[in-house]
Length: 359
Ligand code: F6P
View 1 (cartoon, rainbow, N blue to C red):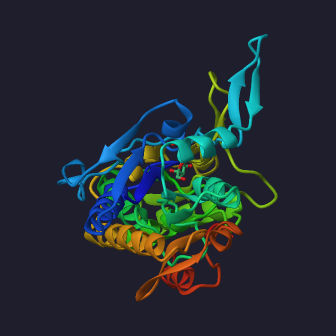
View 2 (tube, helix red, strand yellow):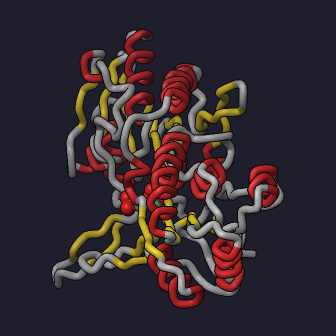
């Protein structure tokens, strides 16, 4: 019997469970067996389990956030941290071990659901002979070769609702609120949620900002009698000639985006004299019920990935090329990240509505 493995890796995104459900049901429909690798690739490295997936395992999960398989964004089999005899951390390549485990389990193919990091690993495993089909996933929407990824619209909805709520409190207190949203080095979430919620300033990595321009916009608001302002900052936004702001985890030394909202709020308060508060939406954007649209993409991606496995189209990733879901080489998806087109109509719409980008 054909044995299919599934793994979900990297940061979670609303819709992952829909993909898993569609894969499992479409595979069972073909008379195949399906197994879930727990926590990214960890299940195949003895760090977690490999679990059988049946129609019962995927009952009632389409509307649930997260992933029933668990995930990690610290599990790269090609670069695995291992403590040596002196207790120092060394990076080891455990990919051969992973390939051997894949064969030992008698798997015929694997569907890897992941963002740019997991798809890079998937591509490298494919080159080592593992028959892999990829499914793109990220709330950041930064994957090239697909029109959109599931999870992105849910994240935008969450951010938009949060910013909507900030308007009333900002207005009551005559404050400026600076909201930090996710997106790594792309500004998709900031742009879409900022325009939808009528922010006054949107800062995205694709358009480096000048603090003076941000202050100007805020002063202009207050002097025109609109005594509050909303600034939406993508976590990876950069000042002209400057750098992104990261936080370093004290226990692991891992660098993560974070801190731009607090930084901007301090600068705005100091230079404009306006009372300013900051808010980091953080992982709220990754949680919760996927929107109907994200569920539909998730289910379509899952079913399409099974069709690609059936057709033997390994090394490909399913992608949305409206109105169709197609297969594209994984290589194409990881070759570059998809950034906001600064001359595109959404940026133009924002500018036409008086929203400032700090440039
Ligand atoms: O890539 C998805 C993402 O949510 C980014 O937007 C964010 O910078 C990062 O993951 C956060 O990752 P972690 O789960 O390590 O906090």
